[in-house]
Amino acid sequence: MNGTAGTDTDVIVVGAGPTGLLLAGDLASAGLSVTVVERRPHGISNLTRAFGVHARTLELLDARDLADELVKTGTRLTRLRLFRRLTLDLSRLRSRFPFLLITPQYEVERLLERRAVAAGVDFRYGAELRALHQDADTVTAEVGAADGTGTTLRARYLVGADGHRSAVRRALGLPFPGRSVIRSIVLADVRLAEAPDELIAAAGSGDTFAFVAPFGDGWYRVMGWDRHRQVDDGEPVDLDEVREIARRTLGSDLGMHDARWLSRFHSEERQVPAYRTGRVFLAGDAAHVHSPAGGQGLNTGLQDAANLSWKLTSVLRGEASDPEDLLDSYHRERHPVGATVLRSSGTLVRLAMARGPLQRTVRALGAGFINAVRPAAARAMGQITGIGIAYGAGHGAHRLMGRRAPDLELTEGRLYELLRRGEFVLVAPQGAAPQGPHTPVPGRVLRASWANRDRQDTLLVRPDGYIAWATD
Ligand SMILES: Cc1cc2nc3c(=O)[nH]c(=O)nc-3n(C[C@H](O)[C@H](O)[C@H](O)COP(=O)(O)OP(=O)(O)OC[C@H]3O[C@@H](n4cnc5c(N)ncnc54)[C@H](O)[C@@H]3O)c2cc1C
Image 1 (cartoon, protein in one colour):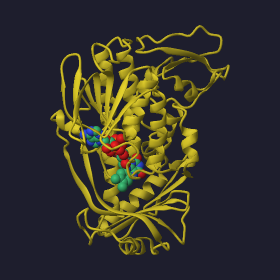
Image 2: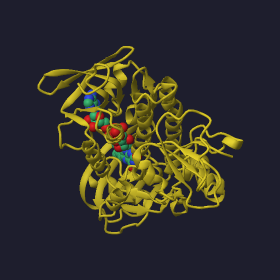
Image 3: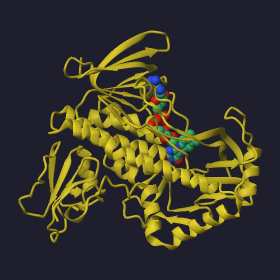
Image 4: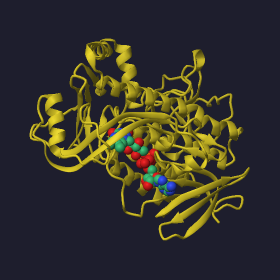
């Protein structure tokens, strides 16, 4: 037994998708024992679903020393053109990563898995969670293999990162309320004769929409939708169907050829009402699903994991003064973020599908309006890129609390380099005895000082890069 209190492991993570991999790697890097249960056999990767990694996610990966390597695998887009009149200029973002990185989901998973393996995570591939039970001190998972054999694992906590059909969510008896938003979206990974160098999302007369994004290696992801061809996911797609949608929406099929992947899918908007049930948590697609518009799914899942991992670490190390409240804060902080993502990605899809002159005018005006009015454009950009996410930011002297900490220059290096140690960072003026926060900190604290001698304020940054406390 590796875990504490007569358990096999400290934490069981169900699902080795991006969410589960980041979480497991964080917990094991902090010295906890972690077992990942994954239904897929080893070496069989998930299909390339997501392909866009936003600035905030890159910052969180930077805090794990993975961002620079990931950036090398993809291409950077600094402009997103949405519905002709709405253009987001990401180069204006105040981040080390002022762009959208286009790279296949398997590259993100490859790096996260490598880190988790190096940190000592115990991976059980070909193992499916079948049932779970919990009492006051432990969670027990019944895990089955494809050959019919089974095993029981006991842990202090369990996290369901097992995707939108989550067995963990079902075992908890939780509903997944919501609805299907759009059917019969076609997807093609292709080569193009006429290549756009920016991401384009365009809508036709309300009867079609199309989306084109370059992977940067000569391949393009194209998605399309046709109101008059609404069929089930199982109906085969041929490239002519995608070409026709592109011609009607963009005025050209861009010379699509050599499709390496064609698929048809539908999209749902659902969110679980509770991210925590006792000793069991839900994260990523297990907790929320929404339309792919805005490319938020993978990003939101990774950010869930980064929010949860340091809280579980603090509690399992016995450092939290109020463990229950700290664990509850995962739901308090991440449920509203998930709800906002559902709303915003749903709005983008509904705008794309807008039909009739009134709806189309609203769409055009909305886009033009957002471009024309700076605060609205900044808000849209902050939300899509994740840079604007804040957890209950305060007012007055507390206005910084809950906000994202930018990558500060410190005498010890960059803030996000220091965050690689997985601890809180207290930043104080040079030479000053640091003034500590008035509230107890649920973890260990690294001390650092501003590179800029003129800065006299003190800031406490959480391990996930949000401000926990600040002087006025
Ligand atoms: C066509 C398409 C395009 C997309 N584009 C984007 C995009 O551009 N940007 C973006 O951010 N997101 C995008 N997404 C969404 C993104 O792919 C998901 O949000 C992301 O994969 C969620 O990660 P996850 O780790 O939470 O879940 P998953 O990736 O679904 O991983 C769950 C894992 O759990 C395992 N599992 C399931 N049940 C069990 C069980 N009972 N026992 C053990 N293991 C189990 C599964 O095998 C799987 O490996 C897209 C999705 C689709 C379909």
